[in-house]
Image 1 (cartoon, rainbow, N blue to C red):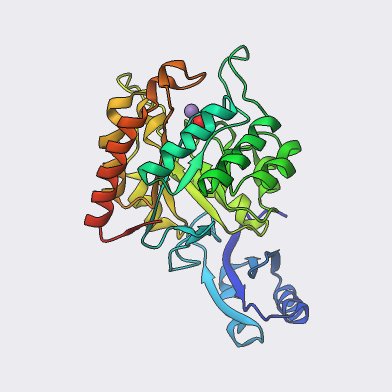
Image 2: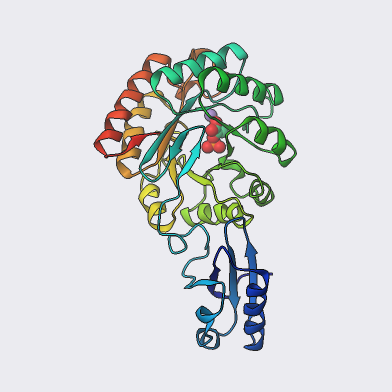
Length: 345
Ligand code: PEP
Ligand code: MN
């Protein structure tokens, strides 16, 4: 059922029963309106479709099990600030992101070998990263470019988690790999190219893993939030939004980092936001200023590409920091996080 004409939503209490929901649906029906029930692990929400004046006159808040009745001012609901005033905080492996906790996610673009990733994990850990990134399934523009190590890459990531103690962020491209990626990762990344792959979004809405959702190359902020709504609607409320640069007419950078997306998302949504300066810039020397700008703008984390030997990288070498550059940038990030009155991890 489409929610096209929904004017308001009824948020049920956590303890509301099926009978409570049934009574509301009957009331709506008797008033010539309809309710769309969306149930997650957390809460049941009923989207109301019908004549605004009639629905507004119903004594909905007096019914048992009703927590609140909210007007829907935006095309997304569960991810909106209206729905939840407090910031969502996501905790994995003892480290947090959101609500004053800042993540530093670092690692290579791709998992290339056991040796490369274990080395990268050690560098990340030494530099103070709070999470390790690395792609095993890679969305490459050319079908002839390195496509990632697949399952073998996931096993290497799991080993790096053991050796470094850092939680793992890795990309899922195909719902057929969902089980494997969920098994080996702490956070599942949905890449920019898949931001509007709605079946993939619904699939990750059903797993018990936080999702790092990257903004599409040509997606608006509201489109990103609606993509997040697809995930949360299925019951997975742990979504991290990622600004990674968008396509504009500018050619000096690989993409244009939309720094204003950070405070705008914070106004519109309770979900945490991280910035990926590496894919925005496409160049090593811009990673530090863009990372610091992200923290100052209010980001809950940065995700940086780093490689033990960037000159040999099989993907994104030009934007990958070497170990020395990473240590320097990480130290500056820590300074700015302290200046902002926040904590790392
Ligand atoms: C990546 O994180 O390596 C990646 C492919 O990012 P994006 O989807 O933002 O291009
Ligand atoms: Mn990359």
